[in-house]
Length: 190
Image (cartoon, rainbow, N blue to C red; front, side, top):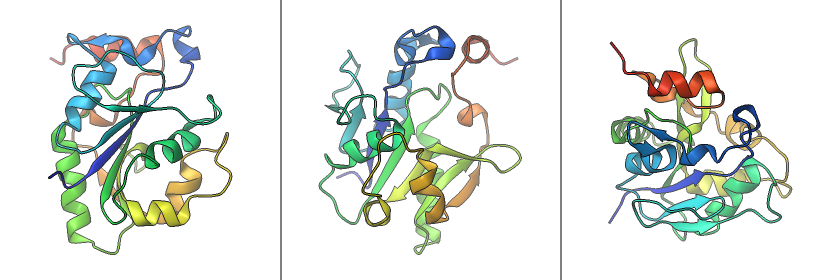
């Protein structure tokens, strides 16, 4: 049995990338979505919020109601498909090409050491939280979820939980929002 679930956000319009289906863009031979699913391979269940697409591994699909309600509405929709009341859930955007299973291992270890923390979030250089690379206590999320989620940022839910901030050790915190980001993700490190 897995010791955490996962909600992967795979919606959005990718306007800075010309409206392409961003999560289906390949990086090193795998789509951004599949790379994110690889990072949560040990999670159960894995819920993807967004339009159904082909994936290398089976997942549960859902969308926020109404569609296009934004990331917090997507998180809320994903949580509805997780039965566990007291477990952990990874909340991830599907556009982090360098996210790995090791990232989730570090976040879980941090939460084990701090049982009172509501969650653990990856932190960029300089300490800025990457809200969509985190592991959270389901009970804390559900208790803090506002009644109105449409068009609200995820930090409205997550920041008040005062999560542990775990420094990124590699490019694992990088995401793909622009053509430059995509080029950087596809360029081998030297």
